[in-house]
Figure 1 (cartoon, rainbow, N blue to C red):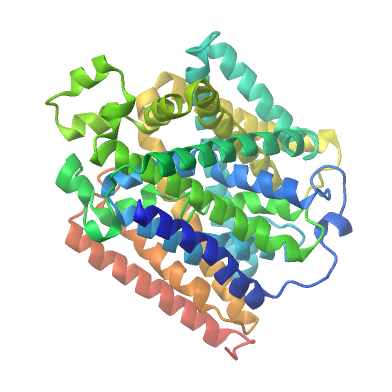
Figure 2 (tube, rainbow, N blue to C red):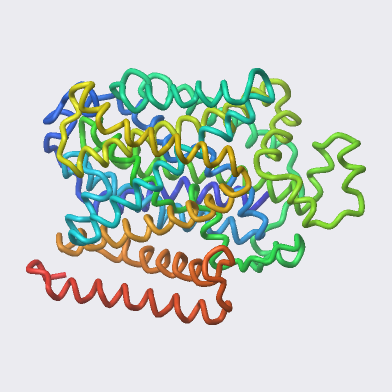
Length: 494
């Protein structure tokens, strides 16, 4: 438990200290924000700061910092290091800089900001890429919650229609009508669940692996996993450390802020909060899998079933949603079961709804169409819904196939993170500011995503040594491209 407390302290101190450094580098001021300057009653609406924080937290979190942290801890205590360092120096910086850039540029989305700082070709490519990602996320988060809900009550297809109808409402209606009212409640329930589980951890004080017990690949040594720690860990734990998906959600909140000075608690603070969620669930996962915690929380018949079984069969049976359900119901009782339901069902539904809304906003920016009338919003939403329905139909017919597609989505979020960090580095350099705070994470994430592309069996599946060489070369080329761009820049005094 010592590592858990050390990591928790680091995350809080990171917000208070490094968060202020990042804020000082960007330099928020008292200029009029898009919510005031472009108020339209639909997407540009001033909301209370606490409400924006809750929406931002839920939008970027969903089930990512829960499921990803559980699976990430299969690699061992190295997950602690990635959550803390990734969150403070990578994810929170990524979220703050991209969110504040959106705030500075009339609430522009990631693709438009990328085009502004990395060029028109990058903008066009990212429009297609982010649109695909948003619709994949939206479709995935319809069917999976429907399966869970149908196990409690009702028909599976009934829940599919209900959830999709909710998506239509969140995509079409003013942001303060559905998202602004419902999301904060769901965010509170998730925070309550995490705090309650953290208290139980402190009371139980279970024996847990510590960071100094070794940062090697425990998954390969003890659980039979075949994936290399690098880069698999850094893709598995995306939300909770670094995730480019956040840069697609922050513009929605940038359009609701009344002051630039709200940026640190909303953007940097929400990411640190998400890191704490990931930290709690990573700790629970380490106890569950490495120190026999599953025997404490599982029924006797389940324990008997796995006596003498291999560790790999154990983690295959206890997938992340199952671990959440078992732990919450065992440690928190009936209330825990309700909170687990909210975490597993409500969180992905809200994330999926926000993804479709983000897709509409991307299209509106791409075509320069105002969204004040219902007709204009419907015009852009219909193709989004049509593609989403098509992906959903394919998923229903090929449930196992979508699991493979989802691996590409996880990798895709980290690709967007790398692009966002490069874009922020160009901005900081052009403004004669310390660009190293985004450049170093950009280089690291480029190494991660290129190495994963080369080595993953679901992608190219090359030899591990060769993949590292190729990833290093790709990272070097990207860095040289950044240096070349600085030398060509008319603002070159950095």
